[in-house]
Image (cartoon, rainbow, N blue to C red; front, side, top):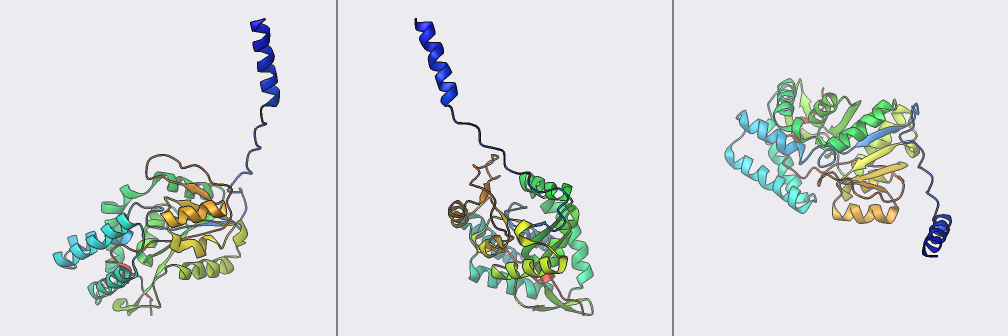
Length: 287
């Protein structure tokens, strides 16, 4: 009787068990040429701030003194520990970087950027985020970095990762020499959303079919532009917002994938420029 009762209970249990939920549609969609992906750089694609790593390279090459490196290091530490961008730190870093590169040739800094990528950046790329970018490329879609870091640095990183290109902060140059001024403001916060919107219009993209990836709540304006937003290694504010909006979430900082929160829903890009800025001035305008 015990055996019969056990078998009957098992049979009823299997009949009452909830059915498996259907698998989500494949994403990214292969062959959708009106879709693209936009990736923040700092703490999304790369561990830490690209500007800080670039600053280390410039210091090694005697572009500035030890006291400047200490200040940049403090800004990087604040960024890593607090997980937020401090406007005063960003302004200070921006002003310092502009003074450091003023008078240097654009070509010189571009060449140095290639070297610094190999020295300090290549080993700090998050494999998980790199795989996400590759999935879009494999689907035949364009993939862009969007960051407050200098456009020259962003372009080096994008090229080395095999991405389509990069949007970044632009610094002014005249006759190939940096003037020490920015063209407009750093590509940060709402400015990123505007840049992505403009690029999408120029490329003929449908933002509702695009994806975006960022770690920072400052990029919520960008993440809210498109149909497939991802919070990658999110700060506390972005994590809360992602849960409220049912966005997908991935965390590669602990070597595990965080629980998925809902389905993709908007887009983003973005970045945290709160590092050093020993390179913000490297973005330029050619005249």
